[in-house]
Image (tube, rainbow, N blue to C red; front, top):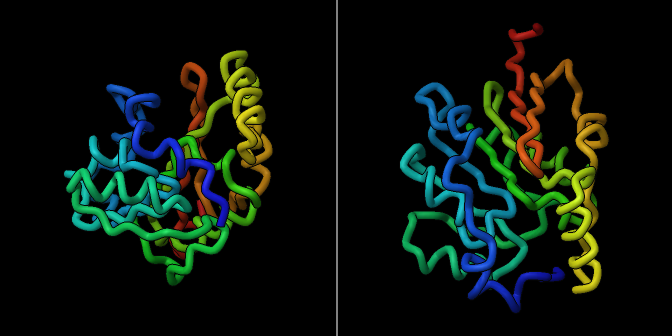
Length: 194
């Protein structure tokens, strides 16, 4: 597995600060969303630090063992799992809530990763996917910088991601916010055909 973050894991949280307000948190921190969270590509745990009190069990999944070690050192009560997103290895319908923040553009096979995540989401479960919007100038500059750093980043337009998700099986809402966009995706239960 290639680890683009091995060298910056110890300083990552000082470079990339989490937002003070996570606008999509209200979609996942509700009593009816369940208690088992998977943070895909969660790195140092910077996002789950602010929402971990909403869940009984938190799995932080990342390709970088160095980033997972940083997350574990925070003592925020996570179960760290190292692996590639395209092959999560969890049983189908395992998680009530899944988040993936600022990660998809680092994954080698984007579509396979999304389908793997949707497979392990429980019926009625919520998947929040947040990504930088490549249509925005600051993100274009970040993309150039990441290419210069030889990272395997490939930023996607929201429409491309949307084309991989079956609207008959998932309720999908798309939101744009500053330089990012995020999806709130709910897996329909077998009786919910609306």
